Image 1 (spheres, rainbow, N blue to C red):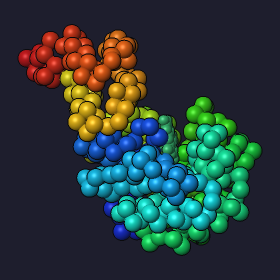
Image 2 (image 1 turned 180 degrees about the vertical axis):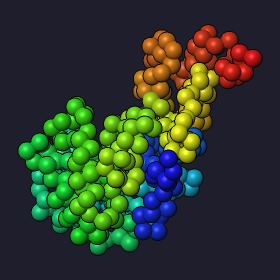
Image 3 (image 1 turned 60 degrees about the horizontal axis):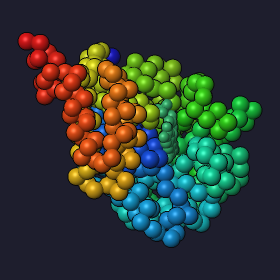
Image 4 (image 1 turned 30 degrees about the vertical axis):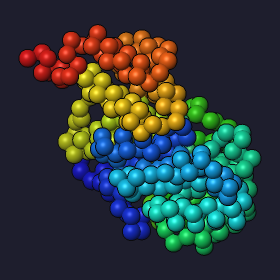
Length: 338
Ligand SMILES: Cc1cc2nc3c(=O)[nH]c(=O)nc-3n(C[C@H](O)[C@H](O)[C@H](O)COP(=O)(O)O)c2cc1C
């Protein structure tokens, strides 16, 4: 197969392989990002989106969003907002914090966010152009954007925005081809990614509805995009990046065994506990609904985690659950069988 998403350069930043973890609020914090990177196959990670308004009056929450460790590099910080001056200030702070890339969110459909940026900016292209130029002028590091296709089916602006971005000095763009009104319903319209790819010279990152390596290959074939970005599938199958690398190199990939899943869940939970993440138990419960997809009798595991009262209890219950479905969870299935 060869050379599918082998690598991408955004100016001086090497993304190798060109597999990108999508920003996901509430999910892609520093712990999750390191967890993903350690599993392999992911060339670039991004922070959750951070409010440029919040960054003017730095508080504990904003500082936590912007915390990262060296092993996470290369790393993009994503900001959102609607005030050109404040966004420029925020971008400067991102650069000063040592991030490799600054990204502007043009996709968030949440009502609270739309009023002050996110996909709301797709309805005000004049303001958007001012913002793109202000951020570009404020920083030297590469500047990227991530957009939905438009506000509604009658207002598809992805091509217009892509051209405007390229002219304003944006160095790559990620397209999630759903509209604001669509939310997460229906399908991502990959043909819009292809149209954007044909319209600009800067790298185009395809995003939306990639759930397995075969989907990533189909996305590349259909759109010619330069990189693939994966969101929801990474939360339920954090091996997807490695699976893509295996698939593109060898045409096949390994499915996780029960014991792989056990170790994955335990590793992530142990990282949350070890790093004394505030609200660790809440994160554990939230993740239980993602991670338990694909686990045999996963509903029971989810129920067990979600009714636990403290983090130690969660881990004990995970241990007990996997011990009950597999006589020897420390070994792979093959080793147990032999
Ligand atoms: C829980 C959740 C939180 C998200 N938060 C962000 C965000 O902070 N910034 C952003 O640009 N997109 C955000 N997104 C959108 C994803 O980055 C991505 O564009 C979308 O999920 C489509 O990709 P997928 O089909 O691979 O999930 C979020 C999506 C989900 C499910």
